[in-house]
Each structure stands twice: as structure tokens, then as C-alpha cells.
Length: 361
Ligand SMILES: Cc1ncc(COP(=O)(O)O)c(C=O)c1O
Image (tube, rainbow, N blue to C red; front, side):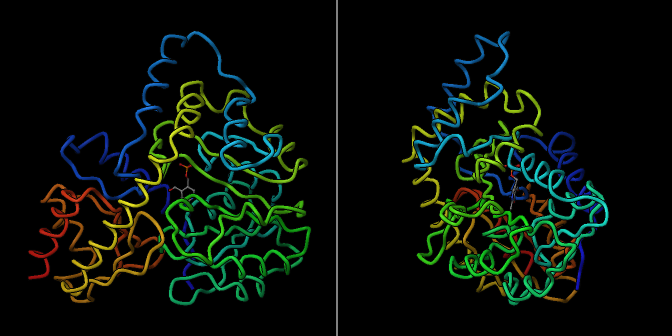
């Protein structure tokens, strides 16, 4: 079983940043970070610009209007919502609140890399469970629960695989976990999921003091630069998250941009529909080339490359750079034969496919 090394994660983030601000020109087609390729609502952009005339004012430290807007949009009690500087901040706070030295943090083996990072930061042991077909197996997770387990993280759908766990299975996980274990349902990519047996987890929080859902504006809402995430949980858990987070952790432009974005749900629907169409198109183009995408519920594809050195995933990365296309290797997971590719606009996807066709010839 492969355990992700946190140093590798930090290295890979570093790599991306260097590419972005260093060697990359504006013309680079960046399909490496799972950002939305479809931009943000014009309402959000206008709200951000408008807020620039009042930059001398601090943000609302409680993100009150934003929590109210989220509550209204998703029919939730705003008092049970905490906002973060990206959902990443909230995952980190949850880790610091509920786990420490000598404790265990549990997640499925190819889960989001933030989870081992959180474990490392708080000095807890990262414990992983095995997967089937790159998908979380609930029984495998349950088998690894010990009296030291303090947090179970489930990214659903997962990054980097793009696979999801159906609602009934997540419910079974929740119901079989001791109430002393915090279950974190990281639903960063939930907007993209079309399957009817999926749940973003919000309904699974009711009546469970130990369940928290995290969401983000970074993906389908197209506001990655603003860093806005939110958590939904019991009032007591939200209370402690709020005491742990920094004052003004969500800046004023970010709050206003996210509020305005919530007022344009049709934009997100359009983004998800186009993402799904492009994902299908990419899949239809990749398979004849002998490249095998894992079925994804998200805005990215994990694609398996052949083992031969000249057609390998590692060789493809360098080859695609010549076409100005950046994709993400997943060697840190031990998935050396795969690349993770964000769904781009059609013209971007076409450049990717042209490059891969030549690469595979
Ligand atoms: C599964 C998952 N959760 C959370 C995040 C973090 O998102 P945010 O931008 O809200 O910090 C990501 C980002 O890629 C992700 O893939």
C-alpha cells in the first residue's frame, strides 16, 4: 500500500507554482490544478471590482452576509456554517481541533493529499485503507478504525481518481463510526456529480455531532483565486471551528465575490454541463489512442498510460510541454502510470488530444 509522503506534496505544489509564475507564459494551457476552465460569473467579477473602492475597510470577521447567502442557497442554518480561506483552511482547522500527537487520522489510500499534510502538521499518524478500482471501500476504512482514530477524511468525489462513493455507503460509514471519531466529508467537486445515488453529504450531518461537510467556491464556481470554502456541521462543531480560525480569514473581496456568485446558479449549472460534455468528448478521444481514463464524476480525468518507456505517463508530460499543455503527474501516490488532466475548454482539449495523438503515434 502506498502512503503519500507530505514532502512530496509540498514539492509538487512548489512545482506547479514555479511553472505558473516562472517559466509559463499566458499562453500555457494549464490542465494541472483542477481549476474550472470556464471562468466565473460576471456578477462575481463585478462584485469583486466594486469592493475595490473600499479596500481600507476590514472584512466582516464573521462572514455574516456570506453565511446567510450560503444558507439561503442551500437551505441551511447560517449559524451552522463556518467560512474559510479555501476549504483547505477548514480541513486544517478540523485536524488541529480533533487530532494530535499519538492519534490516528484515517483516509483511503489514494485520497486528496491535504489529508496526510494535516496529519503531519498535527503530529498524528496517517493511516490508509485499501481501495478497489481506485475507489474508497467503506468496509476497508471501517476495518482500520482503532481507539486512536480521531478523524476520518473522505473526499467524495475523490482527487486524484475522480471516483465517488454512493450515498448509502457514506451513510453506512457514518452509522458505523464511533461518535468519538470526526467524519469529514470533503465535497469539493460535488457540483459536478450527476449520479442519482450521490449525496454532497449535507443531509448526513443532521443529528450527528461528529459529521462535517466541507465545500468550496474554487471549483465549479470558478473562484479559486479568492480562496473561499465553507463547512457545515453541528452548532457545537461550528462554534469551535469559528474560535480556531483567524479573524477576517475570508477577505472582503472574496466574501462579496462569493455572495454574488451564489446569485447566479445558472452559471454553475452551465459550467457543470459543459464540463461533463467536454469530459465525455475527451474520453471518446483518449480511448482510441490507447489511453484509459478512470470514469470520473469531476472536472478532471485520471488517465492510465502504457507501461513502455516511450509512451509512459512520465514521457507524456515532457512531450505535452512542447504543446504548451501542463498536466499533473501522480507519482507521489505511487500511480506512476497515470496523469491527472483537468477538463479544459474544447480548443484546449483539442490541443491536448493533438499532442497526445502525436505522442502515441
Ligand atoms: C478534494 C479536494 N478538497 C479540497 C480542495 C481544496 O480546495 P480549496 O481551494 O477550497 O482550498 C481541493 C483542491 O484541489 C480538493 O481537490
